[in-house]
Length: 210
Figure (cartoon, helix red, strand yellow):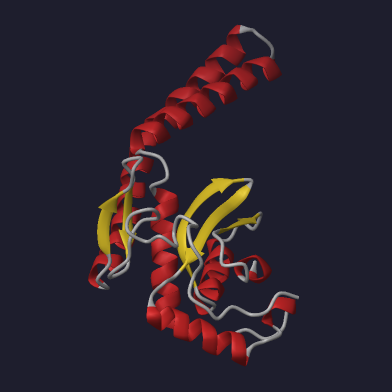
């Protein structure tokens, strides 16, 4: 990741790790070296987008850390995380993951999954009356739980939204209609930040290429 960041171009990080903390750690490292978290989606694991941060404070921090930790790109020591900043980044990434699809889409996807599972039960037990009854009962029970799971999901998102709002993050809607939270002064990629779209050359310094 750090080698790709040294080019100054937008970076996409794919992690098969199941823990959100692991992807947050990668984003926190990137922010120490002149990049900022842009978005994350589920793919084959997590797929996170990073873009350069043109903020003068970010550039100064990056220059300092590249100088202080020259071997970071080769797996050497990294600057320590700021606990409060790490937790806010975790809240932002978790919120983005939980709002990746709408509640209606989640219901549709879950319903389809439950239906496929019910069909599998019938196929596994044999297409007789008993298998149909068992599959039907399983389907009804699981589908009846979906609204409760949606309510729990909304409360979970609301908790992180409240934490971000209290820290001064601003709610915005991206081009797909998805609600996002941006840090003070932050912008979505392509909205006024020419570095976010990968255009132009970011302010120096970056470490020399190896």
